[in-house]
Amino acid sequence: MFTYLDFKLEKLEYELSEVHPYEEIVIGVTGYDYRRKNRLLSVGIQILLCGKHDKEVPMEFTSIFSLQDEGLIRDFEEDDIDAINSHIKRFMAVAFPYVREAVQTITSYTISEVKLPIIDCSRLDLDHDIVLERKSDS
Image (cartoon, rainbow, N blue to C red; front, side):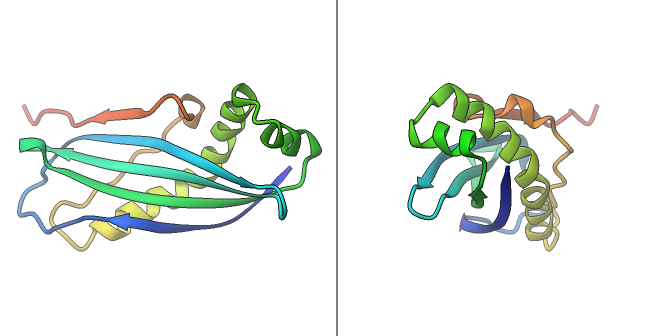
């Protein structure tokens, strides 16, 4: 068992655009930090908006969880990467709706508003990103 405590925006490089410049959006987990003393887990999440001409807009978030389950705690204390990857999927399922809302809110003040879809976070872990491609207007 765990408790979702908070999330925060760590980094944003964004500029106003007159057109929707994003061809691809990459959603990924950048890493994690487990604090044994207080059993807190921070998970890094990156949303990368990729546009034409190699333009990239990174948004980096940190989600914070308090771990209570002894098996879960043991997996992080023993650095069991296979188990951790499995747990990351669950943490992302909880955190992603908040990140999704933040991305939309941040970009809603521009012409290039980004509305991320609801995604299946079971495909997202330390080793695998999710790549969304924009449909052509034709």
